Length: 471
Image (tube, rainbow, N blue to C red):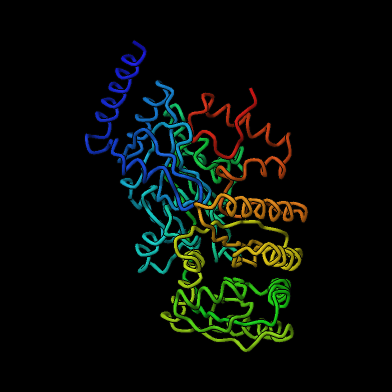
């Protein structure tokens, strides 16, 4: 009898979903569910029971109300390019695939802001902005959903100059677990700054779908600089490259991008992206500004790199060469994966205060070599953030275990240096215990309290960020 009851509930829920977003807005197909149960991480696929494709915030709200009534977990899904297992339906439930909400709204050129829905990716937005002289600089490796980037507090190679999503989100429209629609800074508001009340906007930035579904984000835009120049500089050692980075920032150079690639990484990028840079520790640099200010930045930077034994700069001045260089950097993930065909890359994501960066990278290289692990290093070193792209055979439990132990050692090394276990990928499933070590029991208790207030039935992306409570 219980099964009959269950079947009747399922039918009524599905027909409610279909009446909200149409026949083709609800899918129970195996392939579609699989596709929405995994991201780019090593975490195994956890398919939802059903996938819904809402077309507007009203539909998201109506769907959430149905889920709330029947106590069904809600998992928001953007582009599925996350790196921490954030979209897996660990308790089953309903995946809200937001790709059909793809409007770019309210572009205010003179105010440097725009509002976008979750189906809009960073590349789509920048293509749309192309003729306005404006751009949105936050650039994770993937062409991710901008609302998804807000949900994970993403960043990328430009963060050293332009900040992360935290600094660039002005307002959010969020649907809560019970279907309530809120605007974190007040409906339609977009001041350049505010000190009005609690910072709700940044409570939801980085909340990874555990507090609500982000349905719109208002973003800060920037003028495209008059001059942009990129350069590549090779160094005799890791220490020399990282020391240069610290000195460049200490000299007050407003560098736009400063990326470190170790010898293993540059070798992988050379092979994957058909480049021919020397296989030694390397910095990829980019300067933005007026012609004159760029010349000044370049000359200061060149003095510093040369004093650390850096080779002469190899320039990328025209757009095509520059794009090729940064595409190679953004493809580092795939380049690392190509080192071992059939394997998966897992990226560690620690971030430490700048002065500790040389020490942690040198210690990490030593750890990799001692434990015979493949882990090319690439890092947004201007932020003290770097990734080991661990290439593992997902079918080899022993190897998975040794990579897991390595990641834990690395994270604890970062925490011991007053850093964080995740600079930009988020906590997801794999770093929940590390988060406890990082912020301590009282802060976790406070986070759990916020979660309980906004989502008392634990329906929003359950099992992510916070560990399940001991009953």
